[in-house]
Image (cartoon, rainbow, N blue to C red):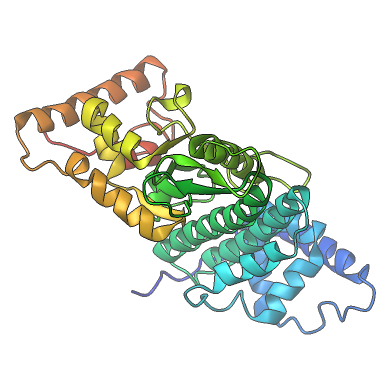
Amino acid sequence: MSLPALAPVPAILLPLVSRAEQSLRGAVAALEGDPGLADWSAERWAEFARVGAASDFVIEQSLRDPLMLLELVRSGELDRPFAPGELCAQIAAAVQAAESEDQLGRVLRRQRTRQQVRIIWRDLTRQADLVQTCRDLSDLADACIDQAYQWLYLRHTQQFGVPTGGRSGEPQQMVILGMGKLGAVELNLSSDIDLIFAYPEGGETVGVKRPLDNQEFFIRLGQRLIKALDPMTVDGFVFRVDMRLRPYGSAGALVLSFNALEQYYQDQGRDWERYAMIKARVVAGDQAAGAQLLDMLRPFVYRRYLDFSAIEALRTMKQLIQQEVRRKGMADNIKLGSGGSARSSSSPRLSS
């Protein structure tokens, strides 16, 4: 499907674009030994004008790190879609150079900035449609989560031993489920990431003098992972992490075993948790074990029979959301109001 033709940059924004261009030229001129912008075509400057008129973020990051923008242009990455796995490979290569958790955080934040500049540029110049843009943003989140996890898991096991299943005797890895927009591959530029952490079975770590219970091992690992992704630093943040969709919400354990998750959903799972789990996807960690977990939860998510009570529960949930929006005066809120992104993703539209 061809995208609509680009409209001209509004005249009212042309002074802003001109200032951005002058600032970029000055920032690049300050780079020693760099050929600068001599190889930029008129078409490239037209793209810069369009992106600069629409995105303060791209301008701010380009002025802060002009070499990053020059490298994106010269590599051709602004002009083509990534091949499958290419984005993850770039994140992995950058993360491997990190020698401490502080460095890991900086690397992830800089990679996130670089990739978001690329994604925004391609979106605003109509080189990528909405589906591709959401997929690229979701792929970026997947890669950042998984590469941070892999880096941390190795060092966590060196410190606390290898978590081992008490029944199987097999080494254990964490499974990280993406929920909501991330799980559905619909992430947008302002989305946080909803995650659920799990591990296959109980047991304890081996290879150290003082073993840890598997749950305690993974809780500590999960805390380190959130710390790598969530906090705001001078380099920004990677993604805001929301763990409230896990069993018992903020009051629940940060990480649960597969059996504990299955038991919770069978005994206490609520209707909204069933609907939320429809979008669940393994985004990081042990993919094979994650597939087993989703298969275990399938009877809870997809009931054998769809009766009137299930339809009524959907209507009730939608009515509660509408009442809360009215109570808080958010009817015109672009996110929470009717037709907003949060309503569209969480509340199925049913006719009465």
